[in-house]
Amino acid sequence: MVNQDSRKESDFLQYIDIIRDFCADVSQRKIAELFQVTDGKKIGTYIERECRSYLEQRTGLTMEGSATLGKDLPLFNIDIKTTSAVQPQSSSPYRSLDEEIFGLPYNVLLFIYRKEDKEGHARLGILRCCYIHKELTGDYSTTRLARELRDNYLRKEIGVDEIIGRLEEKLGITEVEDLNVTPGIVQRIIDNPPAPGVLTISFALQWRLQYGRMKEAPFLEGVIVIL
Image (cartoon, rainbow, N blue to C red; front, top):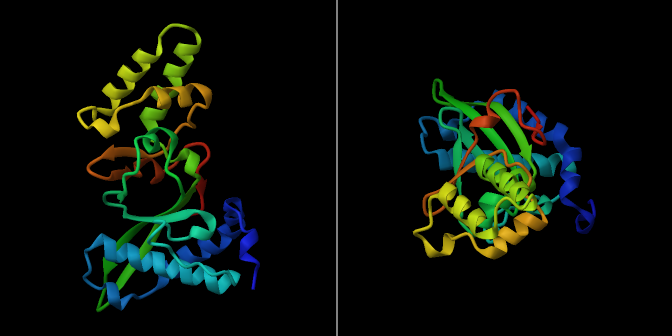
């Protein structure tokens, strides 16, 4: 058994080939339990469970998910996201506004699938699989605006108040007190600008994560395309 205490988030990258094999394996299966199932959550649960099991078999590591931490692969600080190619999006619990600007607190392993029902079974064709480092999980347009505003501030063209106003206008959620852009958030942008995000994130009592940019090439810089 591998010493799990020494595992790091970056260690997951050595298992990319295993994930690629998993995609091929799932795409060839006849899955009776998903026949005529339209609930994306049930399909996602199947992929998450089978991915953990496959990794355990191939690596000797324990890949138990953690509902408390909200991660499917806590060993590597990864949450598995699954979505149909028809409307590639998923949800994530809202924690703070910082996540739209600086990214989610975990890495994302994304599976985009197309489901077809055959005679008494379902087929899940994995069309795309990507590993997205947590620093890149911010909102595409918000992170770029934040970086632009920071550059303007450093050139002394605008002040903190204008940065707050522009970001709140962009986010469009200032009517919710907890979602206001604070001077602390602005200072963090100035001191350590966010990486350009690759997701589209919107707020609807929880985060709605959209993956349209993950479906087809060219892929955004930093995204590791497994399949």
